[in-house]
Length: 381
Ligand SMILES: NC(=O)c1ccc[n+]([C@@H]2O[C@H](COP(=O)([O-])OP(=O)(O)OC[C@H]3O[C@@H](n4cnc5c(N)ncnc54)[C@H](O)[C@@H]3O)[C@@H](O)[C@H]2O)c1
Image (cartoon, rainbow, N blue to C red; front, side):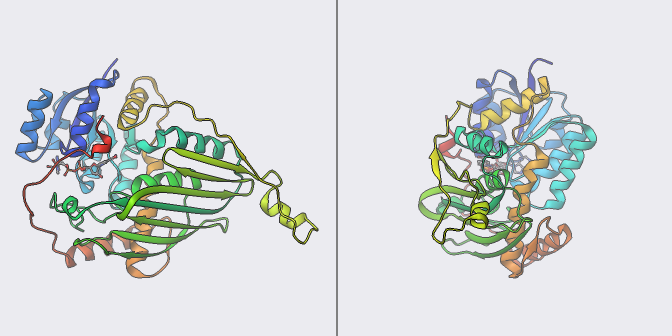
């Protein structure tokens, strides 16, 4: 195989964005599309001039594809991914991997059993500033993490939530900012800073007429005693994502577009324990962080998965690692609603039971007009 034949399942805003990207990626070729909505399907078939299917099973068994990119609403990611891998196909799932960790476990198990490549669309990992932060941490220059923070502030209008019946409902989306806008920031937070072991959270629906949360915040604890704070919202403008990681040997501050790093060569705790100076404090200095060019955006993940299939390249965002974002999101959701601390790994049965209750309690929504499947302009290139 010298090119990976891709089928895209879910030709809405994001699926169309992926289809637009495919001709720019020399390792892949779009050979089929799928959407359960007849209008979206016909539009995609006409636009991209490829065969189309009105259900994922037929695309998976068509013989036309080696891999699928799943860009449906979240709940469908897991069953389609499992079916595709069992049928011998490689998979990229859009973020979040899915809603329930019990379903994410099945995706990882399917990848393990079939040996198929399974990546998740966490394309922000490719940003040069994120790659540079990751390198600093992997080289041990930050040292043991002592304190973390994620402020992940997005903006979404009521019109956005009204654009499709699945959005912002328990039955259709399984959460709000924690399931849709927050996953990228949360993924970087746990990828760089490690996975907390306990969460105590609050959530609110503050600014939108929706069933699910548009704001969530949490205090997180780590196995080594470190603490952190997470804030997710879709109620702010200007928008920003900021991650702070405090380690024994330094402090790292990441914002999209920039990363800053201060070294504390003597070590914060080591200095505190050893100095005999009443007002002594360790020296710190900001050091330059060189940024290396790196392909960014969704295309970078698609290319990486294709190269993993063709040449065994390491995955940038492998499923077994991407699940950590969902551990954090599900823990915050559960804690935010129960008011109790939640341990990570999250109790799968407890989360599923709670979610089933939310689905029973909330009716979902009727269409507020024709569905709008428009690619987020920041991803149009
Ligand atoms: N990685 C990113 O930056 C990014 C950005 C936007 C959206 N997404 C993710 O992409 C997914 C889709 O979001 P969107 O904004 O494109 O939504 P959308 O509503 O615009 O598109 C979803 C499409 O899936 C189709 N669909 C629904 N169920 C299906 C099924 N069972 N089989 C086949 N098609 C089905 C719908 O008809 C619709 O056309 C979500 O999981 C979202 O989180 C990721």
